[in-house]
Image (cartoon, rainbow, N blue to C red; front, side, top):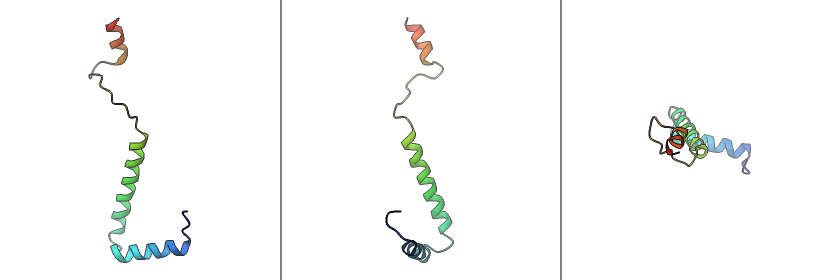
Length: 66
């Protein structure tokens, strides 16, 4: 995992615990989880924007044009 061993990971966790405190860690974890979830959702959504007026679908539009 990016060349980070168990000792380095423990050191990082201890420093984070000292900087933010035990009460803020769940808030930080929740925020990080939401950010990752939103990023994944944004990367999997299609890039197209549907400009069809509400109440009409593509097949009705094709029939009305013919």
